[in-house]
Length: 208
Image 1 (spheres, rainbow, N blue to C red):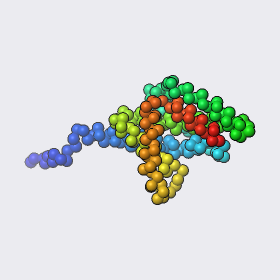
Image 2 (cartoon, helix red, strand yellow):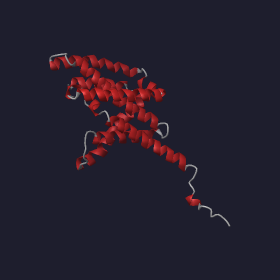
Image 3 (cartoon, rainbow, N blue to C red):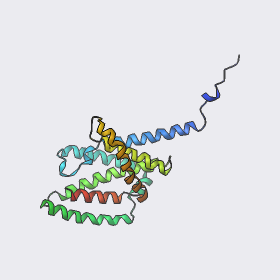
Image 4 (cartoon, rainbow, N blue to C red):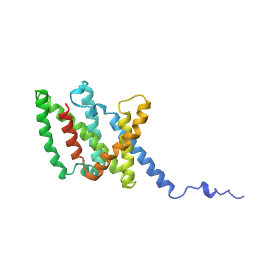
């Protein structure tokens, strides 16, 4: 009695398993990235606009824990994202923005609070995004990293803070993905996150 042999087209090729594993890792990283931001929505606002201070502190603690775990798990990636580079000069804009903040509000009472929350929230978001891109770079070419990370950012910007899906969001989604190509490319080119934190904090103080 002979055992029927599987048809050649039903036998997975040797390249299928690595390909599936790569795709699963990409999906897992994007889901983890979106999930980490989903549990810390108040860090995307920050400053005096947040009235739920206990919630902000709780989410900040969650973000700090995830941040530490990522540093321990990916020390080389973390070092790359925070390495000192020529872009650190951009932090010189922050004191100027702080002066504008005081002049605009007529008081420096909330300055330190807004600076801390702003720097932590902005640093948190860009650190997460940087980790996502560096992890993607281990399995896909640079061009794919750019498009996949931009698609992730555009999706997050489209649906962040929304519980429903409307026609406007479906129209905005592709546009935001294209717009997200710019910061995604800059993050890859600059390698670290200092410029993003400096510019983000400066803008948040000036617009307060």
